[in-house]
Structures are given as C-alpha cells and as structure tokens.
Image (cartoon, rainbow, N blue to C red; front, side, top):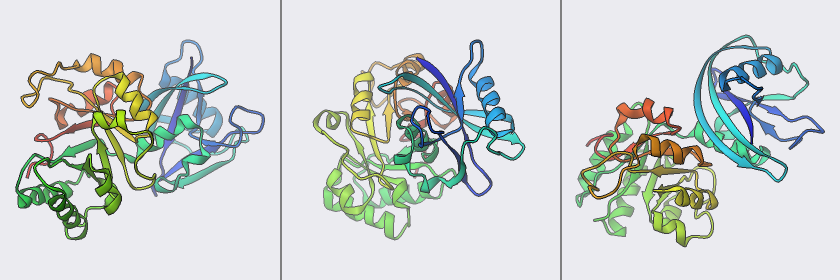
Length: 311
C-alpha cells in the first residue's frame, strides 16, 4: 500500500486550494488536494512539508490531522493521510506545472476529484461536534433543546432522535426548527425516518439495522447529510457501500444508558477507524472534553446526548 500525504489549505475567504493532475499521470485531469508519496523514513508531516515546498513553494508551519483512510483503485492501493494546513509562509504558486485553483468549500465538485479525495471534502465540511437530542415526550422540551443547541457558537451538527414522538409531532418540531428557529437544513438530521427527511429536505441518521436493509443512498448529495450508527467494521463497510457521509461508532466507553454493551475502548475505536473509508464520530461515554483524544484516534469528532448542548 502506497502512503500518501495530502494538504488542505484554506485562505482568508474560506476557499480551498485544489491542484489538477497533469496529463500522463494516474487519474490525469482530476482535481485533488496537493501532496504526494511518503519517502522512506519520512513522517506524514515531513512528507507533506516537502511536497508543498516543491509543488507550491510554501514553507508550512503547522498541521492538524483531518482524516486517514485506505483506498483501492484498480491500478493500486493507497493510504491517504489528509492534514489541514493551519499555518504557512509564502504564496502558493504552481512550481511543477500543475494548474491550481481556489474553490469555496461548498462549491467543490467531488465528481471532478479522485474517489479517495471525496471523504476529505466531507471531513472539511463536517463540524467536530455532533449533538443528539435527549429523549422526551414533550414538544416544548425538544424545541428548547434545539434553540439552545442552535445558539452554540461552535455550530454542532444536530440530530433529532425522539422515539416517543409520532410522525406528526416530529414533522411539526422539524418545521418549527427550520422556519422559526431558523436552523439551516444542512445542520439538521432526523433519526431513521427517511421519508420525513426527503419531505423536509433535512438529513437522516440511519440505524444499524437500516444499513443491512437499504441498497442505495437514501438521500441526494448536497445539503442532506446521511449518517450511520455503527458498532463494528462490517457496519462501517455497509455505511461506505451505501455512500453515507459519516458514521458514528461506539460505545467507546461504558455508558449508563447501555450498561450491557461491551465498550470498544479508545484502542478498539482507533483500530476500527483506521480501516474506515469515511469520517467517523466517537460515541458513548465521551464528552466535548474528549475531542483531542478522539481526533488522535482518527475521529472526525465526538457525538453525544447529555454531554452536548443541554436544554
């Protein structure tokens, strides 16, 4: 497996730098994140710093791991390590003849990119925190949670998981969230109800059982997230097969809500995430304080109920 480092550079206007592969190379003509192969003895950071210096003429100062994933093309297999470049000196220029362009994150066309780069775009678009609503039978309590969560300056992704609501109650709650609380559609998911997600143009979070029942992505790309609950590598692969945007994996630690579920532990979580081909949130006995630990284990971020955005 070829080890590759890729860098995500974002300018002051929120645009991301993409580089076009030259004619005669693998996947020629596609647009990708700049970077290249690791040389023997190089760390990921050293390889990326060297590649960006050679390709763009910049001196990189700081990196942050974004996502690391394996990918198999017909011609070769790679492990792609994507790092967010958080500091550099110099103006990026094409030093090796590659066409460059700065593209707003929400306007990147992933159909123009190598398949392995597409999860990187998703990881850039997803926030590090995924807040799940506490169970309640009270509409006002659910709305109070949504109001507080939507005011969070760190802008988490929000999932409405309200098993005691019938569809009419859930529909009205979602409409209030969209129309009165003004939560953007691309920040809101509903648990399991694909039909309601389609009706209202929000995302859906699939249960593990749904991963085994569905045969295709249930929602279109572009503004409607598809998340998936996973507990093992098989379910993570099913999520990839369904073209889900991200997975939630757990429980990482013991939880009071699921006392009989065997926790993965951080080492088990890291092992499973290492082989995942999509962004993964850590769930179960974790809090916002665990964000750095989760990222070190390869996570997109952390997910939870009571530990995030209490009403």
